[in-house]
Image (tube, rainbow, N blue to C red; front, side):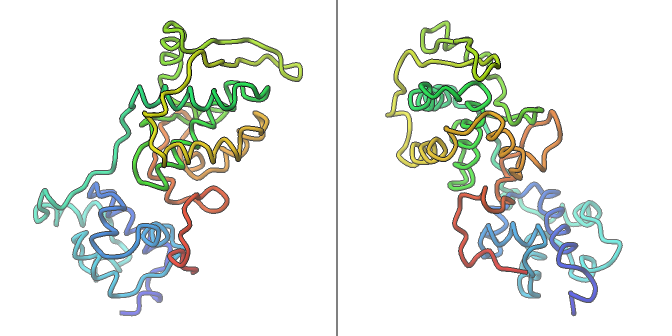
Length: 269
């Protein structure tokens, strides 16, 4: 079967991604099942990496499709799955990791960032939100686990953690934070000052390292610079206005946003 004459690399990738999502499988589960790396699978789904017939056969076994149907013009993932779904065992399905807010972890990450950055005049609400966002999403890309489990929404000025106002109000009531209204270069600015130290026993070394890297890279940026940067990050780009940003989108990042060194796994087209 000469795949290249019938379907483009991008079409094959789109079909693999549709099948995987229709079955509710994570990239992690599928890549392990067919014995290729997760970054390679992400590149296949994006159409940036070719796929050979042996890999496609393995995918067909796990995702439950026939190669002839898959390569046909009128293939649709939904129809194909409806026929094969009954053959799937429950153990086969690993659901995509759903973020669950760890409130105490979130508070300590917030306190830690403020501890290191509150003295910087540029670190108002806008910069703070982005430092939280990149800490959470960079950690997920590196370790495929959630740091704080906070959910972020795509809003006009960039990604914003949900329930943040409620959390901050509670921290202010508990004497952990102080809100300060200031002027910065002629613009009104809301800043937060930590009134207690973060409990570093709540942060693993790997978590602290990711947060430190984000702080070192971005905490001196202006609000507009960090907002513009966040607007080019794939999780933001691929999300709809006002909707929750899916953590899984970090595996579609390109340089300079990707924090994983994929090395030889990022095969060129």
